[in-house]
Image 1 (tube, rainbow, N blue to C red):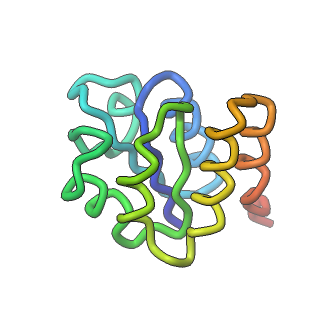
Image 2 (image 1 turned 60 degrees about the vertical axis):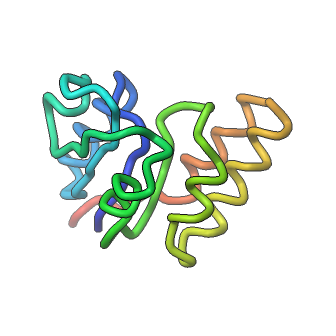
Image 3 (image 1 turned 135 degrees about the horizontal axis):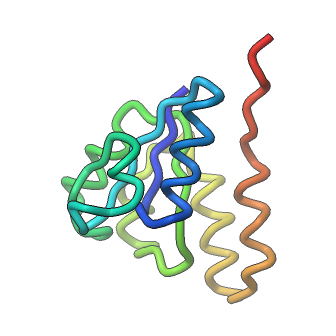
Length: 116
């Protein structure tokens, strides 16, 4: 399982660390070369709306998620693979409603089963 995370701040760092414990590969995209997430896992350095960086991020990803609310929606729609379109649609609804509590739905769409 590979998770692509747009954003490499503190939440991205925690997602990478949690994924590592579950055997899930995570990669982040952030414009800062020294982002918190880049200190604990693989990171792509680039702007959030850079189509080349976004394409690298989502290449081979099973899931695309977001670390923050101000995601460039049009750039994500153009880049995210079709199998992740529902996740993108739900995020767009969250952004349009500007209800942060609804964004928690995104994190519940995918939760890996612990290895047995």
